[in-house]
Amino acid sequence: MTSIRVGLLGIGTVGAGTFNVLKRNQAEIGRRAGRDIRITVVADLDTERARAIVGEDVEVVSDARQVIARPDVDVVIELIGGYGIAKTLVLGAIEAGKHVVTANKALLAVHGTEIFAAAARKGVIVAYEAAVAGGIPIIKALREGLAANRINWVAGIINGTTNFILSEMRDKGLDFATVLKEAQQLGYAEADPTFDIEGVDAAHKITLMSAIAFGIPVQFDKAYIEGITQLHRPDIRYAEQLGYRIKLLGIAKRTERGIELRVHPSLVPTKRLIASVEGAMNAVVVHGDAVGTTLYYGQGAGAEPTASAVIADLVDIARLQGADVTHQVPALAFQSSTLSAASTDLPVLPMSEITTSYYLRARVLDEAGVLARITSILADAGISVDALLQREADEVSEFNQESEANAALPQTDLIILTHDSREGTLNAALEQIQQLPSVLAPIVRIRKEELN
Ligand SMILES: NC(=O)C1=CN([C@@H]2O[C@H](COP(=O)(O)OP(=O)(O)OC[C@H]3O[C@@H](n4cnc5c(N)ncnc54)[C@H](O)[C@@H]3O)[C@@H](O)[C@H]2O)C=CC1
Ligand SMILES: N[C@@H](CC=O)C(=O)O
Ligand code: NA
Image: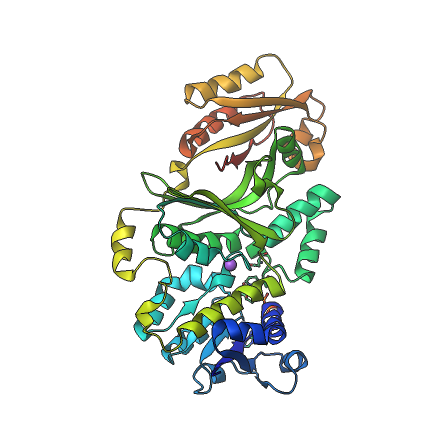
């Protein structure tokens, strides 16, 4: 059996997972690939740690640039991360005619157009299954399994760290900082964990999925991004009482006017399977016109789940070795000649143009007529109310200083679920409601997705 010789750049969490799984399942993977896949050289700044992982049989170097053009390397795996040196290395490897496997969603979401174009010019593959939802084969599902469909929307829990934080906070009552630290220790978080908690990582992933689903270019700069740092415990509790769970969702939706591309906390009905996705698990729901709704679930972060996807890409490359490069699945699912035509008539919509439903919470004076005034502003704007809840405001100091100033006044929380409305229309109505003297604090607004 001939060999595929692999140069591994970065042997941290995912790199070590990749090395270990490849070693453990070497024979079986080789039988699937039709070739022996062997990591022959590893580059990492921490050569001592790298050596401790790979032992004496594998060459270890500190300078990754030495690996990318070596004639004894067939495929380069980039597991360093970030947009800096990783971009230089990936483009360098492509230029040297090497196939590349990467888990680097940040790099591809921001520089994907340039990288995929360079790969197409050189006739090499840039494979990135590990970059979206870790071990879940969602890239393969979207690019190949669902190729018959006009995909209407994709929505997912695609950041393990934030889902882990939300689950642990809700179930164990732990505070945000403690759970984030645990997620970092478990190897789920990005090198800069603000990417996780502020929704940037999920935006990288949904950007890539939007390109594959709709045949548009990767447009990370047009994604709307809101993380979980502004979420308050009372809203998580009120949402539960209304039959919803709050999840950080990445959403890409095709509408008649364009594409919605957004990441933000969302209420999801507890009866949907995705609402039960806990911890670092990920789940992606895809709606295609022919297949209907499909759900993909699994571990979205961590060493071996991510390694599973990295190695699956290696197997794909090994199977194509020596084949005509035009036989490969297009990087973004659509043949490049159709890309620009498909993209021109599908702009990414500004948030004021999206349509969804909302959870609103207003801290108000507990006096007659306040609810009527609020619902009449909503009605005048054409926004209909789906459900209402009134709760005694017993957690004033936990989440609102302005309310604290009014703590002596009788006050209550009004929670309203709306039906679908245009976000721009809702924002204008909220501005008016905010001006009412009985509204004591900034109104909380969380989007709500039915996902059916
Ligand atoms: N950790 C996870 O669960 C997942 C991570 N990813 C992605 O995989 C990639 C790697 O992530 P992790 O393994 O978690 O990161 P990590 O921080 O654990 O590993 C990165 C490794 O690269 C090495 N490195 C840094 N700069 C280098 C340089 N200039 N030359 C050579 N080596 C260098 C570091 O010493 C470290 O060993 C990132 O792009 C990340 O976004 C994707 C899916 C899941
Ligand atoms: N930091 C990411 C890792 C996988 O992509 C996450 O938490 O999901
Ligand atoms: Na994946």
